Length: 154
Image (cartoon, rainbow, N blue to C red; front, side, top):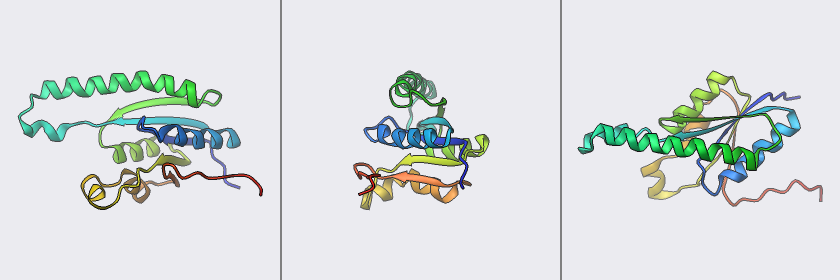
């Protein structure tokens, strides 16, 4: 039988995040596992070459991180109330930060959503979920938004 003690749940505070947290919550309850909830704020280092003063970028990223830390506490209280949870807000490229955290924490599973981009959006923005699946050293559960799954026995 699979034994899960640590689950990394990656969120972006979008409308999909509660669904992703619900899966992590259910798995944590079933396996008596700990959840690490991670949000990765963009680093915006690539915008320094656009003649934006670096201190403006640092201030902007700092405000994103500060807001995310406040949102993290409320999110945990609302969606993961009765499991052991550690919230983590990091700054950097999301896929790299998720995999790095999973490795550092030696997690047993990563749970994350996918926006299901197609066509030109996928070419331009790529897929964080796809990059995590391809580079993670543990299983990854990806959840498509608005794709209900039923667990009834009928």
